[in-house]
Length: 174
Image (cartoon, rainbow, N blue to C red):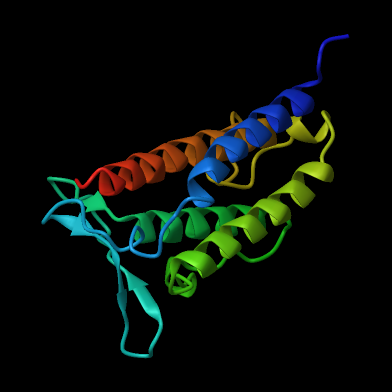
């Protein structure tokens, strides 16, 4: 019997996460704030003692190369907002999503988001996949919950590859 659409999307998510775990398990504390180029985005200590990500409302040209710390914040931001939407909560603003402050806490945060997303996926069935997506297309009827789940998979895969490449470059003495 062929897999349902939800089974396929869940399989893809689990595969992507397993590839991401390879790098999460190997992150050194020095990896997260390593600046791969002079022109980069990172997370920086803020005036209140928390961490603030670099940000521009309009995409800069050239695009800054992000640090692993910035990418982990970025994942935390888009995933938190997606989960808020999927669970019918008021989504948090970008400025409300703080980076936890070090590699260990960032990895724990991402693993917690994975568990929350798994709960969202566990609450879906194939019929739910056809409902208009609450995010990131804000109610566009051409984009369904299936599109949202596929988008999370693609976004996570892209970010995992970026983190993996940065980690490997730093380890190689880049």
